[in-house]
Length: 77
Image (cartoon, rainbow, N blue to C red; front, side, top):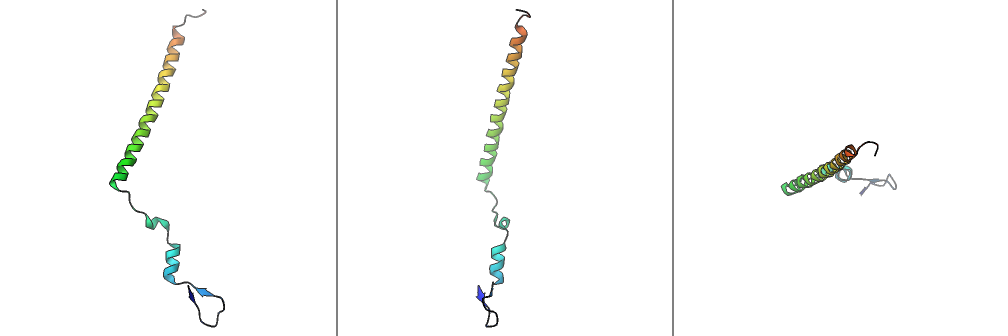
């Protein structure tokens, strides 16, 4: 901060470079991911997708097994 001359008491003036550095948007500091980070992200998404698919498949198999067991029971017994 640079102080102004005599006339204005207690008023300080900020340098333009300091102002722009202080108000600079954060997205300007963004660094693109490295190829290794991209591969890790892709692998993580693939594993999550496979886990979700496995979970849904198991639920569907259990549902079908329950339906099949209900069909095999003779009615009224």
